Length: 590
Image (tube, rainbow, N blue to C red; front, top):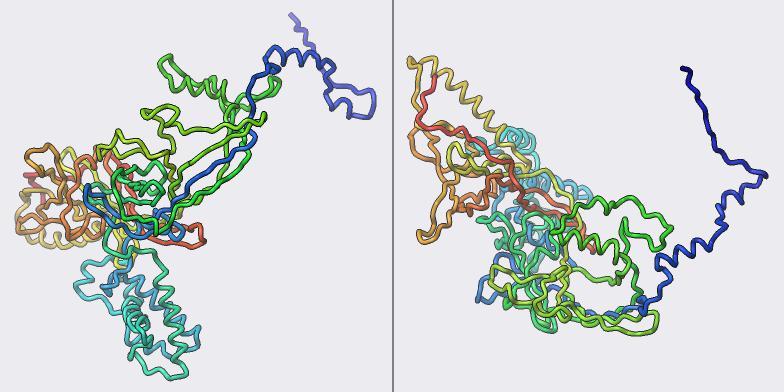
């Protein structure tokens, strides 16, 4: 049967060369559109006016005190002075010591770089003739035989190039800072006798170098650190003096690298010694024009308008018991255009309290907007943008005083380097224990050192020595009380601290690693595992998913244009369970 194929083509035809009338798309029945508006209730009048102006009066109380570490109940604390305009809160909390000024060989890479920069400044000031004298007196000494045994290959190659060729910048800083920082402000007697004509030039070079050296990193000024090793997180508190007394806000569990208002809890009854003389609270008044709140996918105000397709409210799945989703849909579809925003610029690093808010509508009526705590009553559970009392202190029933709003002095974003140190905490069900694995540590030159690769190099060297010993031996089997575990694996053994409590801590233990058969407690090479101190973790801090703690350089710019470079720690979720390879009562072939 033959098919019948037909086409219908619709195209516009104009009777004149002028296209303006056709492109206007004129509607010849506007009465029909007005009828639709009447049917949809757009002409229905309500006895309500839209806001025209808003007059708000706000109290401003800047932060003046900072305390690293947890707060102690009943013990008075005097916090450190803090100015939020000079340093962000993340930098102040996270920064730690980078240059150990009491040790001359704390960072060989920094020593060499600082020494080279001092030589450049001597040349820039026209006194490069003293380069050899400073190199000879502050020469970077080579590694000793004992230091070479605990140094990686990259650091050895670095020292082979730099040793005996550049001055030690850390030793140079100690002498110049002691001499130029005194009242006399004169150069040290050594390394050379500087002429009177060159004395001022060398002093200018030395002062410029000291300024560069001291501003290179942002470091903690004392040994008090907010890092809690038992929890592997930061704990600190800040406070501000207000007209109603001091307000103390504490961040008990800071570990992710970003702070915000919800990171802080209100500490009722606590004090950091903030006084009105530190920085008096002030009040300011702003009169602004409210702006309607808009969002993607909100219903159009007129029925013939087309909404965008960015948000599909029809795709939200909500059961009858999902009240939160149903309320969200009702707000978006019914009351989405009834909300207004009042823009008010606030300075960071302060506690704010809204004293009054007066709205003037289109009818000229003025309405006082009261806080939610006065409208809903003292038992209101609404806490958006308002710090809540700390439940750990047993103050869950205490209400925030007069609706405090806290705008912390925090960073929007920052740059970070690859980890200088990385420790992985994991569970080992085969050995029935937990482990702390130092995957990356900071080398003597200040660069990341992969401990797995270093262990493999050491293992290959030992295998070569064992091959010679095995060839001379007549036995073919060997009994092992326990197999060997890499030296960068630290066992964490469960210990019950208090017999009357079920709490369990994970403490650092020892392994059979030497030929005498005695247990050896592994000495960590990094800072996270607290070398030289007892390591005791709460058991819940090492879940089945594990935990990962890193140390890395952070770089950011603050509101005053200053830049800050520091080393901070981060705690993240781990990589799950693992196996150390530890076995007991094993017979191995030689």
